[in-house]
Image (cartoon, rainbow, N blue to C red; front, top):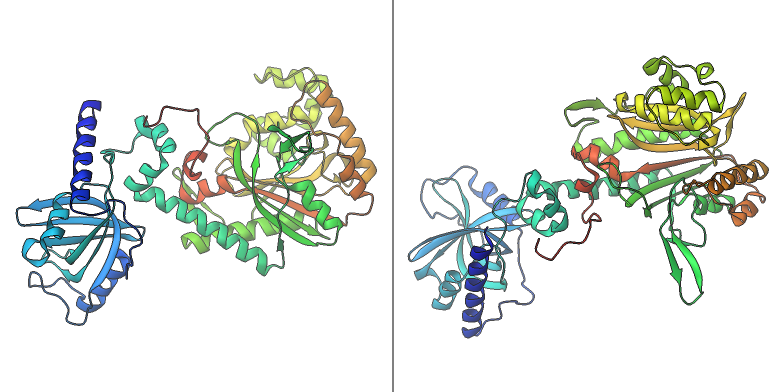
Length: 504
């Protein structure tokens, strides 16, 4: 609404606030003992009446007086009577207020109500002739006066930035948004239950660390004053979880926030939720089975079906999922073979001919990864496991027997989006040290996302890490799939945005 109109509305609401106080009422009340949710009242009526009543105002004799609480979403006044809709987390119910059925103060309070006010109301349930479940009000309590109007139209592309900034208004105005985050909550619960049944132990590892390791990413840097040391927000939970496997935890997982100082897009957020799982005496083939079982189970439990539709594409998540070697995927979609890429210099020339601009230090493995990302991944409708990645871009993964240039690693794709990354963990401390040294050389060349040397992790490996399979699932991308959300910001309650003036 125009600023001048919004100002007038705010003034009017302030005047009503003062009138409520003149009546001796607290416009921002305390505890309210509601007996039922809106959904529960509607269920009571459905069980008692079954079909719409033929008599206006008829009430089932068996129903007691109930009380509900929530936000007013609609008001219809008609002289000495009126209606308003009150909504809580479960749904909404209509409330009928008639002057001769309530005391004078209650009816005056009704006259001072606005859209957005939070109220408690008690009365007897009935169903109108038009089939509307309704509460015949006996008392009405103001619990929070809304001093600003609710948005009239809170949807559409022109408002998308405001929806993210003021998620509370988005949740009030759009029940579908609440459904998205209910699905998110249910999916995390189902994940934990599934893994606990599989014998995994949930753990928590540090968010701050003296080193940022476990992934190729640029970290956020901070400073600990008491210790006078630089610390980093974690970019992964991997290295601490594998330390726990060294210590004897054979099956562990963590659901945690990780932080990567990178760009924003519909698929990337600098802060997101990562599920990491590690299992001793397993490898990446075991992680494939675990991935497809977990994700299909999650879909069935949360959505009722393993078949999901994302942005017009329908996929069946039922196991087993196909396995496709990375090199074979490249050949199918570009016609290129590993021989065509040749050495590092030849690979860069091939990439250039395909329109990819890569740094002069890019290796053949890095070129392969870029080619697959550009020309293969968008076409992987899936669900599908892309397997066996170049060693240069997988410094924590075990080499593939007989193929020393590649490692036992996979990424899982659904609808052209990577939702999981896993590998057989490298447990040879000497090989791991050499990989770290190679990563350090990359960092010296200017690659800010290269791994750092982690002597403490190497010290742990030297005590013996059993053969281990590791899996990471970006839960936010998975929630995008389950809720048919086009942007990662749609599944994060309060995504990071540039600051804006309050109210804009």
